[in-house]
Length: 191
Length: 365
Image 1 (cartoon, each protein chain N blue to C red):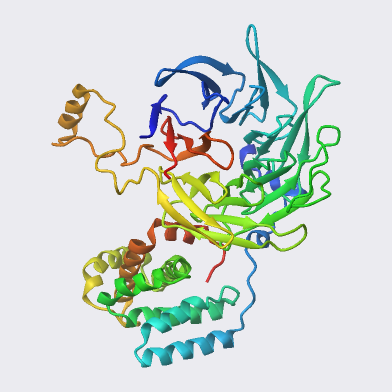
Image 2: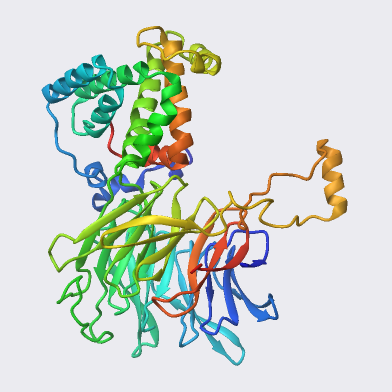
C-alpha cells in the first residue's frame, strides 16, 4: 500500500475522454517535399554568390519548411546558417532593422531567432561537440570576444559558428524584443 | 495621473468594483476583502471568508450588487447582502479541478465558471429549489479554461484555454434566457453550440478573451506575446479577418476593450499597452505608464529612512536600491477592468497586480 505514490499516478491516462492528441494544438501546416527545400537552397546559394545576402536571407526565412521532414529541415538549417555566416558583423543590425520594418518583419525575425535557426543551430553545435558540458561552456565564453571580430564561415569550428549565432541572437533580441524569445518557447511549429 | 492604491503585499488575482465605484472587492489568498472608498483611498470594510483554498476570481454584479467568487477549492459562492452581513450560497459546480475564472452575464441572471476540469459551468438560479445549479460546456475543450467573456446578449460566451484555442459558445438555457437576436456568431444556437474556434499561428496558451463593445469582434491574448482580433462574417462562414499583432513585450494576460476600435492589454511587462485598429488591421498604438519614459522608479520607496540606511549599510550600496521597476505595478498585472465610461466609451480602467496594487489609469485621447 504505502509503496505506491498516489501523487505520481497519471490519472488522465486512465480517462479515455482526456486523451490529448498533440495535432490539435498545432496550427495546420502543409507537408513540403525535400526537393523543394533543395531547390530553395540552390536559389539562396546563387543569390549569395551574387552578393545579395539580404534577399537570400528573406527568401530562406519566408519559406520555412514547417511541414518538412527531419532531413528537409536539416537541409534548410544548413542553408540559413550559411547565409548568416556570410553576413558581416557590422551589417547585422541595419539588415535586421530593415527586415523588422518590412510588413511581415516580426514574423521573419521570429523565424530567425526564434525558433530556430539560432536556437536550433546552437543545439546542433552543442550536440556535435565531444564533451558537451565543458565545451559548450567554453564556446559561450569565447563568443564574447569572438563575436565582433569576424563573420565566420561555417565549418570553421564549433566555437566560431556558435559565436556568430550568439551575436545574431543579441542583435535580433535588441530589435525584436523579449517577445521573440517568448514566441520561440511557445510556438509549436518546429523547423 | 494614475490613481495608485497599495492594498497589501500579496498577489491580487482578481478585483471588481461596484457600479458606483464605492465598493472594491479584492481576492486575497483564501478570502475576498471588501474595501470602501474613503476620500482618496480605500479602507477595509468587510471580509468574505468561505473558501478554503486560494480565491481565483471575484465579480460584483453591477445592478443586483451580488458578489460571486470562485476558488481552487472547486467551489463558487454567491454572496448577498443581508442585515447580518454578507450571506454566502454554495453553487453546485460539479467540477473536480480548481475553478479559475468567474463572470456574471450582462443581464445578471447567469454566471459562468471556467475550470481546470476542462469544463465551463454555466450557472443559473433555480427558483423551485432555491439553489444555484450549473450546466456544463464540455466539448471541445481540451484543457484548462483561463478566462471567460460574455457577449452583450448574455447568451454567447467566449473562453480562452490552455489548449491554444479561443472559442465562442452558446450558453442558451431554456426558461432562463429569451431567444437572442441573430448575430454574426449564429442564429439558432442551442446550449454548447460552438460558434467560433480560433487559434493563432504559433498556438500558445490563450490567457484572455474579450468581446468588443458591440459584440461583433473577439480579441484574445496568447502566450506568444500577441493579441489577435477576430471579425466573424456570418454563421458557419470563415471570418472576415483574423488580425494578429505580435509584440516585442512579454505575454499579455488580460484584455479590456475601451472603444470599438481600441483595446488595452497588460500582463507580465507590468504596464498596460493600447492597441488600435479596425477590420483593416490592428497595431500597438502606445504604452500607458511607459517605463522608457519614466525617469525614476514608478513608485516611491515604501521603506523608512532608517530601513534605507540599514540596507545601504548591509549591502554596501552608496545609492538607494534600484531593484524597483520603472512602472507603477511592481509585478505582473493580473486583471484589467473598465472603470469609468460606458461600453464603447471607456475613459478610465483599473488594474490589479501580483504586487498587491490596484491602479486606475486614464485612457489618453
